[in-house]
Image (tube, rainbow, N blue to C red; front, side, top):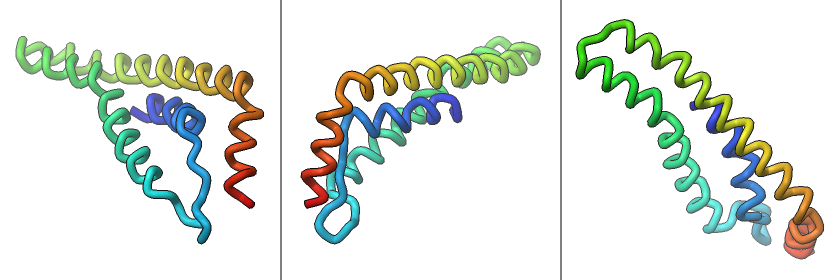
Amino acid sequence: MRGGSAGLAPISSLVSVQPLDETGGPTPAYSLKVHIALVLVALAALVPVAVLLAARRWHEPWLAWVAVPVGLATGAALAAYLGGLAVSRLQSRQVRILRVLADAAR
């Protein structure tokens, strides 16, 4: 789950750029973005949880231990994939993102 979160944080910041409001606080859209991120972080744990459920269903204790490396591999894959998406999005849209943030600062 941490790996998925590590990849989700930068991509969510670049998909929906949310500048601060006039008082320096978060905008109402920021709250929606946080709630969507919480759901997506929970979804990142689906694969290891599925392995744990299979272990319980089939009464195979060794399969429960397989959930640990499966979770690590899933987290690493999500971190690498989502981090790569964030890098490419930043490289392709950096001027627009900075313009949105600069206009909000005025």
